[in-house]
Length: 96
Image (cartoon, rainbow, N blue to C red):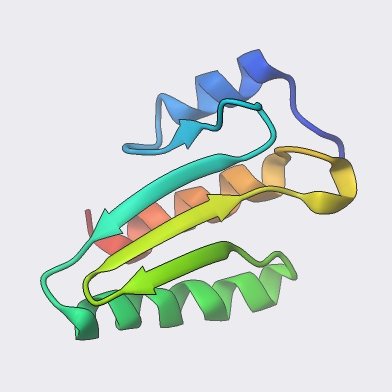
């Protein structure tokens, strides 16, 4: 899978609320906040199942109701369509 051009990433992010291109341009990031830990963990479970199907796994950090996510495709050295697709799934899975 090929690394996407910055303009392509920025265009895709206009449809992904809360996601931002990292300063170095190599990843996209988002912080999700939920009502409680159970909601955050449920979200992470849904994303984990999809990520496993995609064979594309997020970098994430969870404390109580907050999930910080970073998506990048290490093999391509930056953001690919896989990252955009997983971020799109996260939008649906979060219910936000």
